[in-house]
Every structure is written in structure tokens, then in C-alpha cells.
Length: 403
Ligand code: PMT
Image (cartoon, rainbow, N blue to C red):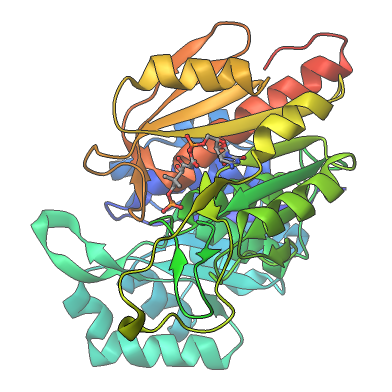
């Protein structure tokens, strides 16, 4: 049975991001009941939430169809989330004031409560707000964010609403994970850049941070998939994801090939070295010996090997890191490696590719489809990629083979 979540939304500019929180919660298999404060309705309409959530959005304590909506909501909830939680909401909740449906629901529930505050830095740092937060934490309320970054009005500082995906991860952590459209599916994702040893100290590497692959792994896990992340990085990952750490292309190939038969989908977001030193020196190469000549040899092409082995029900997704001729180069990789989908990004474009939190990609699929996406967060791009995996696997179940 799906978990019931009350999603409270307060009146702040970040209210528009609560729409994405709502969508991600539903996609994770949650039953979502939205509750908007009067202030929230100035920023985003109840109709938007009603269309995305599991039941119509509620906005009033009095005059609702049921006589006591706050107790109905509070008692049946497995979790109450407030995103964004304004300074006013924190103050009222800490003081036990219930003058609208959301604050009444917060007082009427025994379920865990997760608050995602969002406000200007000065407000977040005000002693009154700090004291309210301390009070709420002492009562067992959970907090996610706020993050540092750009705020409304051009300011920059702490107070930004946590990324919707992070709010949903925190929510899933509190209600013990979830089921979703990918429940029962096994998805293997690679992330980070491989390191090819020159000697015990030095290596040939690249600039991959692992952010893109990690976002795909988290998005698949949120939808209920059993996820294995094969990574060269040690970035924190979402609870429930099995992490296998590797260093070189060979180590990555060994793990991925070993796990491939048990995977429904593989997403190779890792930047795998194409070449490695033919031999790694057993001890540190000394300067005194002159400039060394390092002979390179090709690494195993993991995706190409997977493409050869791929069974009818499996989906193979590659990435293409390009510096020009994006579509033509990516299309050639799609065909040569027998992929179902390739996510092509121009790594020279500002805001795209390595290390940044955003990416701009063109998706090319084996049916000839091309989808040029705008610049978006890596978390949002990961959702698009996982949408395609979800659709592709469902089509295979139904006898089709759409990517
Ligand atoms: O990690 P971030 O900092 O977030 O950066 C994200 C990213 C730029 C690394 C990511 O978006 C990306 O483009 N990943 C693919 C990088 C890459 O190796 O591209 P490629 O065009 O060289 O390789 C094509 C595909 O073959 C890739 O899926 C790659 O994983 C795979 N490959 C490559 C070489 C090899 N020996 N074996 C492989 O499987």
C-alpha cells in the first residue's frame, strides 16, 4: 500500500518548486494530499497541485467538504512535509498556533514531520527563527536545507529551498523507502571518471565529478528500482543504493560485465578513459631519470561489450561527451555500441558537462527520435532519462521495444 504524505505549501517564491516535489513524490509511489496556505495560493494555484497529486489540493480549514479536514489528514498521514516552510510557519508551529488547515494538520498528526525552510538569509539567521528551529528540532521535527545559493531579489546566501529531489530523498528516508513504477527493476548506473595508473602516485584521469551519474541513480531509486552505482567517486549517495567503488576502466568493466545479466537497464554516465598506460611503474617515477615515455593502449570499451551481449528485454543507455559535431558523433556511438538511447552533451558549453550542477543534452534513440533539451539541473535531466527508461522497459513488457 502506498504511503500517505501531506504536502504543505507556504507562501513564498519557492512555492513553485513544491510542484516538482509533488510530482517526484507521486512518481516515487506516494499518495500525496496537498495543503496550501492562503499565502501559497498567491504564488501557485491549487489546480496545479490537484492535477499532479493523488487527491485535490485543500486550502481551507473551514468550509471543506469533510467537517474536520485537519484531523482526517493528520491522523491518516505517514508523513507531513512542508516545502517551502516560511519563517511564519516555523513560528506558528513552534508556538502551537493552529489558525489554518496546514498548522492545524501539523498539530493533529503523530506522523513524522519534515520541514524544508526557505527564506532570506537575514530571516533564517534571526534569533527568533533560530530559537523556533531549535524548539522544533528538540521535538523531533526533521529538517532538510535550506541551501546556500541565489535567493529572490538577486540576493545570494543561505535560505534557498533544498533541491526537490533532495526533499523527496529525505522523505523516502523517513517513511522507509517507497515503491514506484520501477519497483522490481534492476538498474545499474556508472558515474565519475576512471583513473589509469602511471605509477603508484600518478594517473591519467578526467574532470568527471560523478554528479550526472549519481543523479540518474537517485532518480531511478526514487521510483523504486533496485540500483547499483558503480562509481569512482566517494560522493554521498541516497540510502538504499548499492555502491561499488572502482578506480580504473578495467575495474569498472569487471564489475559492470559481472552484473549485466541481472540488470534491466544500464546507464553509463561515467567518463571512462579510452587509453591507459600499457604498464604502470611499480614505484614512483623519479625526475632524475629524464622525461619518461609512456606508451598507451586502449581500455576495454564497456558499452560496446554490453551492446554485443544485450538481451531483448534489456535497455542500454550511453552518454556522449562531445566538443563538436554533437549529433553526428553521438549518433555514430548509438549505432556502434547498439544502444537504445544516448544522452549527448557538449562539454565545452557553459553550464554543461563536467563538474557543474546543470547540463544541456540532446537525446537520440534507436528509433531515430531526437530530443533537444534545454539547460536544466542534472537532477531534472536524470528524471528525463529515467522517464525514457521507464517507458522503454514498459514497452518491452508489452511486446514493443520503444526506447
Ligand atoms: O560527472 P559529471 O561531472 O557530472 O559530468 C558528467 C559527464 C560529462 C561525465 C557525463 O554527462 C558524460 O558525458 N558522460 C560520458 C563521458 C564519456 O566517456 O563519453 P564518451 O563519449 O567518451 O563515451 C561514450 C560512452 O561510452 C559513455 O557512455 C561512456 O561511459 C562509454 N565508454 C567509453 C569508453 C570506454 N572505454 N568504455 C565505455 O563504456
